[in-house]
Length: 37
Image (cartoon, rainbow, N blue to C red):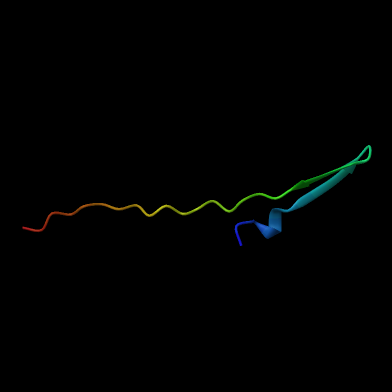
């Protein structure tokens, strides 16, 4: 669930398998304080 499935990559070179699993960036809530008069 924390991986971008569409961007998963695998590469095999000289007997070495490299798998890249990019993580999904967490969306941080932008909070603002609004004073009510």
